[in-house]
Amino acid sequence: MRSARVWQRLLGVERTVVEQVEFDTETDTLVAHVRPRAGAWQRCGRCGRRGSWYDRGDGRRRWRTLDLGVVQAWLEGDAPRVDCPVHGPTVMGVPWARHGAGHTYVFDDQVAWLAVRTSKTAVEALMRIAWRTVGAIVARVAADAQVGVDRWASLRRIGIDEISYKRGHKYLTVVVDHDTGYLIWAGPGRDKKTLRRFFTALGTERCEQITHVSADGADWIADVVAERCPNAVRGADPFHVVAWATEALDQVRRDAWNAARGGKGRSTEESKALKKARWALWKKPEDLTEAQQAKLNWIARTHPRVHRAWALKEGLRMVFTLARQGVKSAAKHALHRWLSWARRCRIPAFVDLARRVGAHLDAIHVSIDHDLSNGLIESVNTKLRLLTRMAFGYADPHALIGLGMLALGGLCPPLPGRTTTALTR
Ligand SMILES: [Zn+2]
Image 1 (cartoon, rainbow, N blue to C red):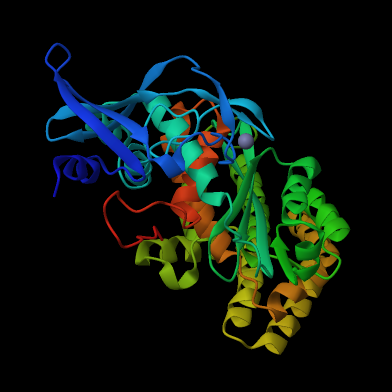
Image 2 (cartoon, rainbow, N blue to C red):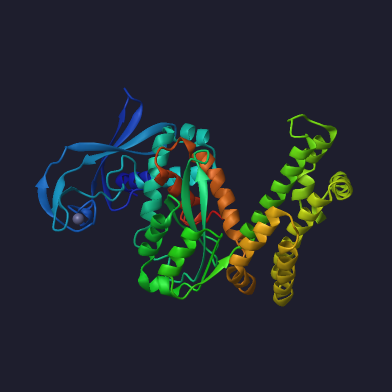
């Protein structure tokens, strides 16, 4: 192998001529002088079309690439401008880096791979870059991975939800493919305008192919789905419906707790015990510890109203357990019995809940019939929430979205030089 070929392999560059390699003793870095091969020469950096020579641009420039052994390495080459028939004078594209990037493809890909799998400090230290730079790299790798790949062609069943970040000050709308389990889209905001952007990107024809959409009871989601997906049935996902019941139960427990404090804000033995009973009330009965079971028995004796609220919540959860077990008619029957029970229970929070469930009855039937459990979207949301914590230092929501798409959308590139594609789920 000629040494130029060896350098080409070592640096992980393609369609590139390595002209010369020097070691800069002053900065302790390796600099490889490169140029695109003839076929990759004079192409527009934005679209790849061949353009005519325009000017020298800003002269020579450098791109950071993967370290070689223990030293930092850079590629150096000309960055002239070409006159693109579409984009006009544009900096020439190079086969070793993304347009406008200060790092090479192999460097970008390794940073993206690490950002998905390891800690912030590990990425910073290993790659010797600031967290801000990681964010910029993640955003461009994710954007690039979605270009020219049609990932939405067979989209049929989707789940839509919102997730908060920046301590609940900001929101993302997220869309999950029920059939693959992948996060397929995320956008800043939680309103009709945001969701319309997704359906616009999806295109009219594919919107018509959507058969099922699951979401919580939010009107803004329901309205946009009705307007854009004419053939979709909308399901109210069981996770959110049970979450409504849990909220209602908590309201009843809090009222009892306030009453136990005699309205004077004083803690009593009784109010303390009620506060501690929170977990026993929330958990599934089959998961209760002995101590929690004892607490539940105590509530049954001392606070029958709270206990009735608990039983109502459990009754609603049972509907979806039956649905998951595939006994759909039993699930629907149980739902109707639950509704008439809740309507007459004389606990305001649950009378309200019965009204809410009644209003979404069709959508709940759909999710029972079609097994649209949003457990999937919830697990994506849980993972995304972990990423939002990690991505807290990013000013730009697109870095967070990029990280989500790489980690949960199956878009993370393999490590440079490896032939297998490692998905991250
Ligand atoms: Zn162009």
